[in-house]
Length: 499
Image (cartoon, rainbow, N blue to C red; front, side, top):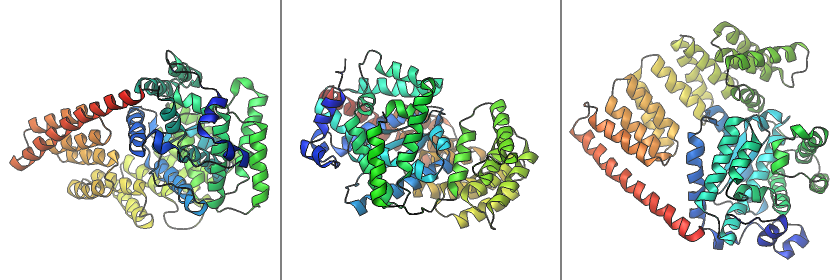
C-alpha cells in the first residue's frame, strides 16, 4: 500500500528552504536524479495508451489542433523566462463535463471539455493550461516517484482505472474511490493536495501566461470564480477545486503578481469561441442531448445572452448535424459565418464543419471544394487535411486519397489517426492486406503490440498481397513481436526500481 504523503512532507521533498523563502519556483532540477526524462516519458506513454483506448478520449482534430497550438504558445514562452523546456509536450481533450485538467509524467496534459466550456476567455483557459504545464516543467510527479521509490505500475494502474472510471461514469468521486481503493493515495492525488506544489505550478504558469501575451488577471479571476462556486454550493464543487485546492492566499498571490505586471489587452484567437462551442456539443452523447443543446443555444441568441453569437450558431449547426438534420445545420452554419464576418473559409472550425456537413449529407463534390480551400488557407491544420482526405474518399477518388494519406503518415509519423484513415482508404479500395497493415501501424504507435501482431497476421492471410508485400509484413511481424517482449522487460525493470 502506498504511504500517505501530506502536503508538508511533499513540500519538503520538492522545495528547498531557500526557494520557499524567495517565493520562487525551483524549476525541478533534482528530477534528473530521481527519474530520467526517458523513463518519465515512457511512464506517461504507458498511461496514454489506456487513455487513448477509452471512448471518452476525444480524438477530434479541431480540438487537438487548438489545444496543442495554445499549449505550444505557452511552452514557447519558457525561453523568455529562462525555464528549461527541452522535453516534448502533448495536449489532449477528454469528454467530461467536470471542470478539470490534469498532467501526467512525460509532458502529457489532459483538458476536460467541461473546463473549456466554463472559461469565458482564451486567457482563462490558458491560465489553467499554464498551471498544468508548470506541474510538468517542475517534474512534480517524477520527483515524487523517484524520492518515494515505493510507487509501482500497479499504483499508477489504480490511478488510471480511477480516472477512466470517473470519466465514464461522470463521477469524479467514483473515479477517485477506485484509484485509492487498495492502493492508498494514488500518485496524482498526492500531488494535487500538496499546496506547495500548487503554488509552485501557479507561479510558473503565471510566468508563462505573461510571457505568452495573455491576460494575467485571467488566472486569479477564473480561480476566484471557481472558489465562489465552491463556497455557494458545496454539492456542486468544481472538480478543479477538489483536485487543486484554491486558497485565498494563492488567489491573492496571483492577483498581486498581476497588478505588478500591469494589464495589456491580449489578442484572442478567433478559434476559441468555436472550440468552446464544439466542446459543449461533443461532450454530449445522445440525440436528445444534441437537441437540447441546439434549443438552448437558439434561446441564448434570441435573448441576447450568448457570450459569442457566432460560436452559439456554430454549436447549433454541429448539434443539428449530429442529429442528421442537414437543412437546419446548414442554416445555422451560414448564420455562424455571417456573425463571424469576413470572407473566405473563416476559421478551421467553420471550414471543416462545412466540409463535413456537405460530405455527410451526400454532397461530396462540395465537401471536396470546401476542404481544398481550407487546406490552402490553413496549411498547419490537421483537421483541414483530414477533411480533405475524407472528401476524396467520399468522391470515390480512392487512389488520390491513399496517395495523400501515405504522405500524411510520413508527415505525422507519431499520429495514429492518420494510419487509421489510411486503413479506411485502403478498405474503400478493396485492398485488404494493406488495410490490416495500416491498422497494425496504428496499434503499434499506440503501444498495443499484440493487436498490431494480430492485424499483421490478418494482412498475411488476406490473399491480395504480392511477394514483396508479404516480405514486408513478415519483417514487421517479427519486429512488433520483439517490441512486445522489450516492452514487458521495460515494465519489469521499472517495477524493480520503483516497485
